[in-house]
Length: 282
Ligand SMILES: [Zn+2]
Image: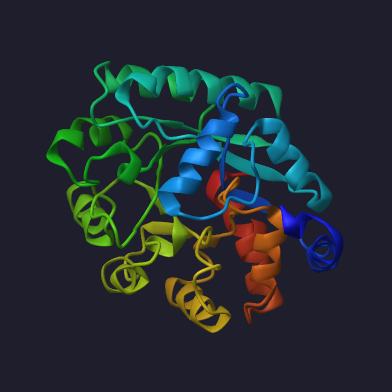
């Protein structure tokens, strides 16, 4: 958390004070596994995570200096047996914290009734579901997952982890194929459509009107010029700011975002305008 202290925090506060901010991509875990979860994600990506313990309280304290209005919180089930307990956890955290906007999770291998679990999520106030198919080990467009998408289409949007040169599960062309097969499925493609495979995302996803994006865990790996180009190519009305907490702190993502050469209006759209419109928040 080097950036949390001293000049980094001051600079981020100075930059952010003119903006209303919503965070479209964060992860929370129950306190008893919140440190282990961070260690294992850090190993998976070989990246030092900005925040060592990903609890709700840590997320709130990370966001508090910037007055973050809403945080999309989620946690993907790496094993089908975790689906219901993770969903119960996210539902109860969202009941405790009104700044949270919750996304539940599902898994292609879930043995329960998908539509019943989707009913339970909607009743619990959840606004979507998160899938991280690299962790979950099924292809986004795997036929065995189609029952799951049938239960979601027209009901809840899916936030997909997208891309990674090391895996094929979450390749952009798989999402493009899924969208052809599910014409009413709403999706948010994380990481500008494909972490470390942005060229493929440009080719197969950026032309599609139906896809929204977040820019989390991308700015650290792109030059500000390249990131600005990609965001403009998608359309600044369809990209949402996110930190991928606990991967990155608000301070470090805000300082990276500041370097993009976007207009004031574009910044406002990405920081909160698009998020509020998407989720119908005042
Ligand atoms: Zn994520």
